[in-house]
Image (cartoon, rainbow over all chains, first blue to last red):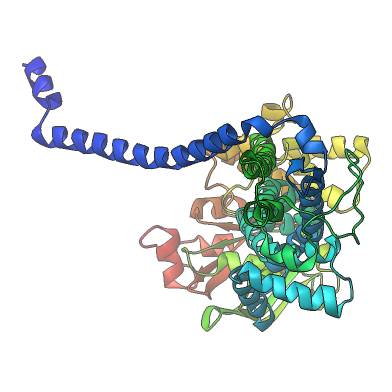
Length: 302
Length: 254
């Protein structure tokens, strides 16, 4: 009798079947959506690489454009982009992280923090072309820096700053308050708490937020067009210190735009090759950031 | 004859979160080397009361505190060095908080923050605190592993070890036994009886029997007001001064 009872108990019911079928539908639909993310990426990369293939070589990367940009490589643009990204993050990352630490750890709710938070949100929503005009007015003309890598980087920094502040604040807020209270209870100062507990446990999130800005900075054209990027420039080939911060520079994003719209009878593969280098650089940085994040996560302690 | 000195004196303490007053004027005092118990149902302001003593209450926005809290006769709110004050007080929260550090670093955190860096001194201190909190035997071979990976009860004892690590004069235990099994609780209670000789202990507890076992005097708080405060043999007798106390401690309600 007990066997019979058990059989009825675990036998498939109508409700059970329906539940199971729904589960399968949901899994398939959600899986397809996830796949929909991967397909365009692979398609884009595959298409670009196949079109760019004839031009891609080490020489292409480390030699200057020649013949009105129809021949040669993209060295000056490639190095220019690296300078712009590096300098702008060197400016915005420390400021953004420290500002976020202040807002999240020190500041009490007051009109001042409300104003700052509002500025952060609104600044993040300003279109990049407006940043470009601001950079032109503020850094190039008013501050007298002139069109240069420095002015362009400052403009890019203003653009990335609010996003870095927001992502850093999020990372800091993810550290439980109880940890901070435990530290305060034993007489630790705010700074000792931040230094000892909060920062070590939010560093992976902070870094992720900062590194994500690399791709954004590398891809922007408008802000640098007005403030420091030029149409064409020749620099010492293969020398990574060929630019000074006061120089104007070429940049991959702008170079891509120029080659596709301004240069007649450029080789068909050239724009694609530029795009591959731009995309490759960004993907490389992103991969590195994921590696760092995985490493730091593995040391996460609660 | 001079009245005996008080370790902690609280007088007319009122506390409000925004417009909501949660403590409506509490006064009591604690003698040195006494175990003083505070009992009462949840939401009666016990935890907030402890936080007024070490001034961590100030870190919560929108709190208004009135009245005075004195430690060794000195108003805590007039103390310049709030970190110094907090180092004189060990605080154990109801839910265990293992800091995301190794077991060793958890205990060494406070002394290091206070400027102790000698390895030998720290080693000795860590061992002493872990022994006092009845945790040493379980963790002595893995002091490098994470404090957050310990079980709940072990983490709570780690929290107690941390509270002892800066050699406080006052130890505040806020329902420390919530996450600990009865056997370990008894072991810690034995430790507390020993610690009494070197520090003053303020014991907030939901366990009426624990207050009865450990304390010399007990205060019964209800909705932010003192119902009764007195020696244990009065509070836990068959006729304390307040009828409500009797009903609460004998389990008729609450």
